[in-house]
Length: 386
Image (cartoon, rainbow, N blue to C red; front, side, top):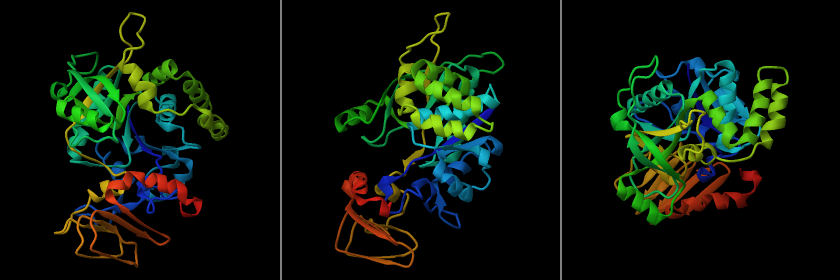
């Protein structure tokens, strides 16, 4: 059966001071969309994208255990058992492995999508079509790991890239029919490149052979665990202990004991890179894992910083963008982002290309061009304002 795991564990330090330890970016109701009566959270948008694609009782959220109650409040339709709470952050390979272990225990045929909770993705019908293709690729051949790729619109240095190989030519296989859409949208993966420098990013975009790594995947739970055993046996061993106890009286105690000890590494480094290089074969000599990509030609916005949040807003005639429940007043100002907290007025005069954010207990002012440095400032501020 098909399942979906929405990953919602990030802290969102580049959206400080609005994003805090107790209320991370994925739970902030600050995304305004045409036709909505109120701002939405990124997590709510991610959950709604699953409508018509995955049954409500087969949707899960993997997050920090500390966010459980806040998520239940934001999305009450998710039962407690549908929230997989990590007792400590151990990066994405263990979060995905945790989900795979839980799903494989209850359904040995589980195929699941790993989805992000911090993106704007439009149009949603194209997203659902490509996810459907991803599911069918795995259902047709459970050796496959499917990743999703976005056509780059500029030479970003903060994203990972995927080099596209030859098209997937899927044939009728077992009980599943041949897959429509593979010719134009599904490809073998040559390699993954993590956050290149500017010259390399420019070369990748110009070549047309590289796409942004969207951080979304589809695979069979048992196959993922097999790859984990091969490439990260320490994580596999710990997750098997968690799986064995899952659903019993000691499940919480074992999770809290074992999970924080798992080696911290991303799923791209731990699984996808070695799998794409063909580092293991089955007994018959056939490559055991096949990594392929599905191209998603759509609007994909990673709302991970104030400049990217600004991309969700309409500008005034001077290029300024304003948000928040408070009042923003700008005069002789150009290309600024102003977020005004409730009950507060932010006045901006004669400046350009600034980010100004007001909340009840903190105010941020910075050049837009230096937004990536905010996480360094955040580290110096101290716990009292986090």
